[in-house]
Image 1 (cartoon, rainbow, N blue to C red):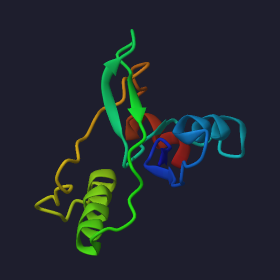
Image 2: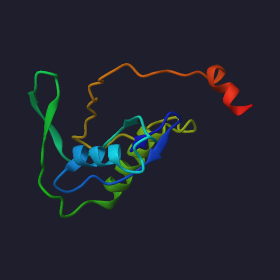
Image 3: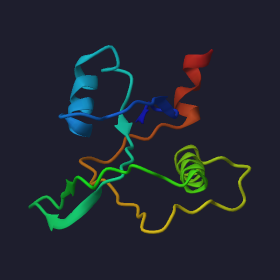
Length: 124
């Protein structure tokens, strides 16, 4: 998912040889290049326990899933939507299925924050 300054801008698949890095590189040079500032990604693969000098984990490719329980898949999709969209009406959050864990991207810079008051003049 690519995000602009107000929320989700674009959702796409990052499969193939280049993976997530290749897709992000593509979107730095295509029609989307000036429309997003951050991203989230979700994977069936897992990070390794090894980290490089910057604290970045490598990702290993997991076995291909040939069959899945539709109930588990639907609950995981619901959980991902809740995690990414943060709906205000949900009192309790659906948990990802067993073994799933969240890992956080290492930030490269502090985000620039804007308030409504500082942008209000653009609406007038």
